[in-house]
Length: 317
Image (cartoon, rainbow, N blue to C red; front, top):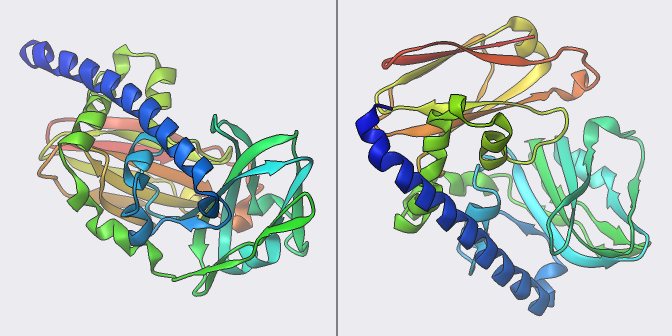
């Protein structure tokens, strides 16, 4: 950024940052009360879809709690529910619905990650997987990657009692992403205005701060690569063959208000994104393929070169 643009860019980014934090607190607490009052919502799977997105408070909650949309996974949440000792997840249903999945247990109402369960780490012959928890209230989030033609969310037991039965969802349930950008307005643009600025000033800011503000809470084995894109700037990504062989590489481009613009699974050693009309930022989620869940390969990502016309990245081991 030149000095003139900084005079207005940084103050606006600071206002956006403050606005985001306030809205995250307010909307999060309103939604917590809503779930506490509407007990029916807590006792059924809430799978992201066009219908759920249009429900009261859902989109504002997602845009403050998880705004880097995962366009490659089917995402469902359950709870809050009270636990005395254990919860158990129906592995058979989950494994039939997805080649790779992640379940995350959150505290409630703090939404702190308590533990995560990755399908690759479990014995696929087991019928149930049990998690021991301290007495308290929790919620559960399940992300399905590489889903099957028939998708069912698993039954869940709480303290050895069935809390929810398996729940069928259409395999095309994620089609709402194609029209999600239509929800863009001044409110969401104001919420996320600061993200582009901190990515552009990344070299001057603590990396832990940038990661905390931008990245989602990923599974331990997931590697992220990310950066901003200027208007009319192309993106070129070169990937070593070993990474292509052993990892699923999920690409998503967001506009400045954090709504997804385009996404794909990268399966070749070279990927090129043509120049975009508007500023934005991208995110690569790089996850070991199920058959390589114990791989010793460590993913490294680095900016190889940059100019106003093209930004080049290298993904290697």
